[in-house]
Image (cartoon, rainbow over all chains, first blue to last red):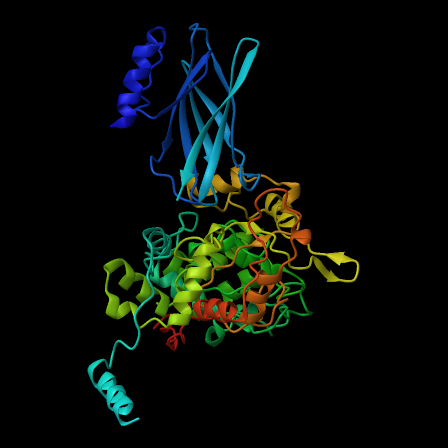
Length: 133
Length: 387
């Protein structure tokens, strides 16, 4: 419920981005944003398990409505300074939507997801923290 | 003195079952312990193996597991090293094939739940891993032609093959080698370790059954607290007490003077070059799901000296670690208590760090680890292959 309220607040606060569909097919996922980009994503399956492969579905938007590209996705455990043992691949689904396969969080704890996006010459790294128990 | 004796007698009469109160457990500890069960989980079924879960394949697999004619000199079977009555290991620090190998025979308990196989993870399926010792010149030194001929020419095995695979053994040697391995894998996937005192305690803890909890020895409870507090579950995660991945825990790399075992780094190279990996033609999983890890796994410099995190259930009586470097569970706990941070050269919060345990704490941790084992039930003889 809090997530939903947050998303509604986001849409009210950023009416120019209302065209960036946040519904990723099975309810709304998580949102990260900067002054230029807004990225909505959700895992598939929705529930992440330690050591189990999962995918991420992305929708990448820009404030200026320019086309944007998802360049790279990775994850690290900042406390232990190690990343994943697996290299994810990105498939474009068109219209700013992407599917990232091959994600595996092989340990419980705090993971920092990095999302590299680009619109034209400008690229930026957005990040999001996930706690896996 | 008389009053003391009377009091002791009264206690003995009124509390014959609950001789101790269980330790207090916080909500976080209960959640952490809950993740190590329930046990056993459902028996897994590998989609890359079309005969996984087939009763006929399990029976054929058990016969093949004990079949020395798969080896070049007819003297060695899978069961030579993976001994049923010894928790599927041989009790040696380093396995003995046609010569001594560099690593310990891994246990087969719960191997069907794994996703990487062998100490270096060179196998991405139980069936592909089962091919390796058959062909390895240091182990069974067999070959596809020998295995295929055995399946075609031995009447009982040919009959068992037809039951399991729905056709008589064909002409292609490599296919018959792979099918042999798939029957072996079907059998090995049934080797699920029995429930243990830890499982009874874990279930009682979740149910709030203090009387049942109290049957778990206090030393094991204290050891479990150390296990949780030390975050051992970062790697020894979940019901099997392993996340199935790889780590360097400070065991020496050297196999002999001047020679090192690169572990996972070498295993990933072998995986990529294997004709039997899940990206090849022998994978029966048309959906491609089972090959996901193989497709995405990355080979990193940090993989050097990493070995598969073993599950902690039913590990046998030792020796332990990938190369049998530590003889007993006491030695294993001593290693984690005293491991050198310099050897692990971590510039972050290390996953493995010296626990600096007292003698009593070490004994408690050993008591907990021992509570993950029981005497395995006697194994019945397999049913006839083709009655």
